[in-house]
Image: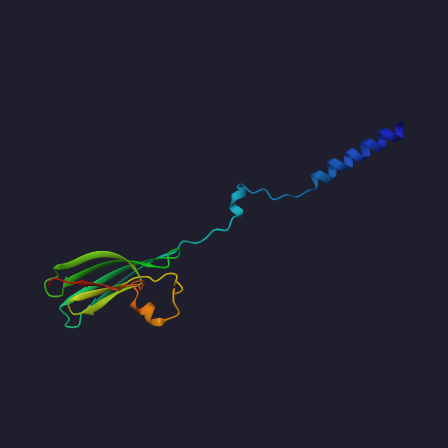
Length: 139
């Protein structure tokens, strides 16, 4: 009877001692182990003169890491008088001068789709192509 009590006390002490030796990392939030993605936003400012150097195109680009297209804010103004001719915003790939009095806005092309027909003439005649937008400036 005495040996049985000693054995029970021994195993109970051993169990308590072994649980006391466990080392666990105490972290405040269990949700912190999820992967965190960085959201980087770049702002760039660019200026371009047209062909005859009478108008200036100022472009402010906002590039975000989660968006493949660029967000543009643009201002066109007279080079001599500094009068604003056109102001706007656009989401796409690029903005540039088309000629001396117009801008071209190039859209972002995402996923390319497989043509319905194997005939290249059918694809060229279709209206599914991405169109470049031309903006005429009233100057």
